Structure formats: C-alpha cells, structure tokens
Amino acid sequence: MANATAEVIAAQEFDGVVASHRAQIFRFLLASTRDVDLAETLTQDCFLKAHRNWSSFRGESSVLTWLMRIAINLQKDHWRNRRLQFWRQTRTNAVDLDEASEWLPSGERTAEQRMLAKEQVAHVWRSVENLSERQRTVFLLRYVEELDLKEIADVTGMGEGTVKAHLSRALARVRRELGEKR
Image (cartoon, rainbow, N blue to C red; front, side, top):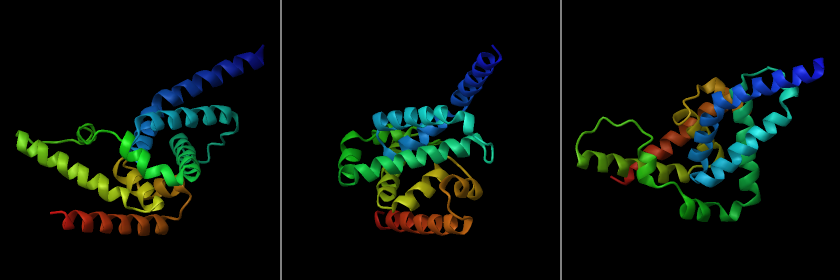
C-alpha cells in the first residue's frame, strides 16, 4: 500500500514537471527544427524518456537542465538518423515565417514596420540555418530560451569557454550574413 502511495505521489510530481516545462521544451525544439509536428513528437519523446527515468533523477542539476539535455540528445539522434533529409524537410514543413515573427515582441505600429520586422526575422532564421549544429544549439538556447552561459554549458555538456566561443562565432556569422543582405 505504501509503495502504491509513493507511485501516486511521484506521478503527481512528474505531472507538475510536465506542466511547468512542456512549453519551454517544445519552444526550443520548434526553434531548433522549425517543424511543428517534429517538435511535438520530440517533446513527447522527451517527457516519455524523462518519465521512464524519473526515479533515477538525482537532482544534480535543475529539472529544466535535465529535460533540455534529453531534448537536445533526442534532436541530435533524430538528425543523425536523417542527416541528408534535414534541410529539405525543414523547408517543406517549416513554421510559417509570419507565424515565427509573431513570437518576437514588436513595438512597431505601422504595417510597413511590421513587414520589415517579419523580413528581419526571416533573415535571422536563414542565417541560423547556416550555423553548425553546436553553434545553432547554443544560439537558440541563448536567444530563444534565454538561458545563461552556465545553464547552456550544463545542458549541452560543453565547458563555459566552449559555449562562449560557439556563441561568439554564431553571433559573428549571423551579423555578417545580416549585414550582407542589407
């Protein structure tokens, strides 16, 4: 009876984890894959894997860091299995750029300014597509998920110096490509 009670408590605790972190995991995976269906599938896989391993979570990192690590590994596994199809699928199943621009806060008031903002978002996404896998992951964790450098290091398993280097290179490349398109 005590064992059944403990399982119910653990299930309720995990339900709270899902409720607290599902949107953030999905948002990261959507920004990483730009495919709504794939992001949803990987999000479900992330929480399924986390649920299976919930009893072994040691608490050495935050729950979000642990979940983000699972999500990154699932994403890497997916692309490793479909490396040749990656950009083709992204382009054909991608989130609409108008929809993506709605994710960003915008203080513009005129239709022209909104259109320019949408064009800028499209340029940023195209630039991010050209980054290496590590640079793209670090860039998205920093600027989409707003994780600090230590959190990114924890999530990716990279050292903070490595994270800084990848972020710096990613920013330089995105800025350079954005500058070339103007």
